[in-house]
Structures are given as structure tokens and as C-alpha cells.
Figure 1 (cartoon, rainbow, N blue to C red):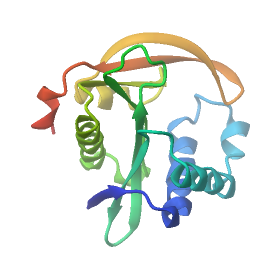
Figure 2 (cartoon, rainbow, N blue to C red):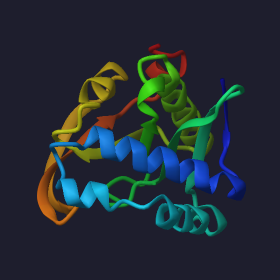
Figure 3 (cartoon, rainbow, N blue to C red):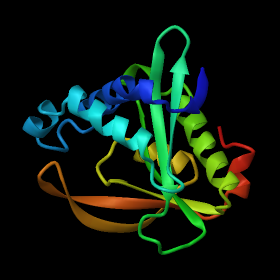
Figure 4 (cartoon, rainbow, N blue to C red):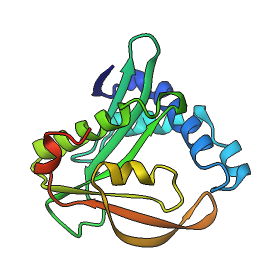
Length: 176
């Protein structure tokens, strides 16, 4: 397994991981019609834009297996809410379902932490659907629920939970 920065040619694979992981992870959480209408073609266009024109400090990492290709990704940027000038935001981390629980998510998480440390951040935050089945992963990685808010996702109002990490020093060695 290798983790690297995303390239423009990765957009279709990223879109595939993004759509498939959403359709499975959010089944029963987001409306079925919304999930069914997620389009790999449209997601590819979105990914191409994100990769071609990243915001300052934004990055996208991919995890690839030699025999399969891209099996997951993680994205980060400076904290969007700007409540802290010294904190990054993990905006996404998704894996194809058949590659979960194989330490790939933990490796992607560690790569995000490493990137944020290189950018001078001492902590990070990540917002997720409160019903997201990945909550235990965030806790295993040392995340602490820090706040909640309501937001429209998939056409319905959903609660989001912010997980926070305030000290990267304990994460650098690895909690894997």
C-alpha cells in the first residue's frame, strides 16, 4: 500500500471511491433517492476541479494498492470555520468497503496529521454526520467530540459532530 498526493488522472478513481463509500456508509442515514442519484461522472468533474484548483493549504491524498489501484482517500485544508489559526480540518476520509478494517484508514489519518504538522498546525478538527458508522474510528484515532451543528445533507437536515485533536505530538508516533 502506498499513500501519495492525488493527481488529475486519479479523478475517476477518487469519484468511484467517493460515490461507492457514500452509497454504502450512508444507506439508511441519507435519503435512498439521493444516494442512488450520486454520479461517478459528476463526481469525476468535481474531483478534477478540486485537484486542478486547490484552495490555499488544501490537499488530497490517495491510498493505492498495487494490485487494485486507489482504494481510499483523505482530504484536508486549513480549518474552514477559522475558530483557530493553528488547526487543520480533515474534510474527508473514505475507503472502499472491502478495504476497511485493514489499517489503511489509520495510515491515511497519520498521513493527514503529518501533512498538517508540516503546514505548522498543532491540531485538527473533522465534522462528520453524527450517525456516520465511522464514529468509532475517529475515537480510536484519539478524536474527542467537541461540538454539534445542524446542516442540510442530501436534502434533509442532519446533525453533524465535530471531532477534535488538540495535540499532534501524541499522534505522530502513531496510535495504530
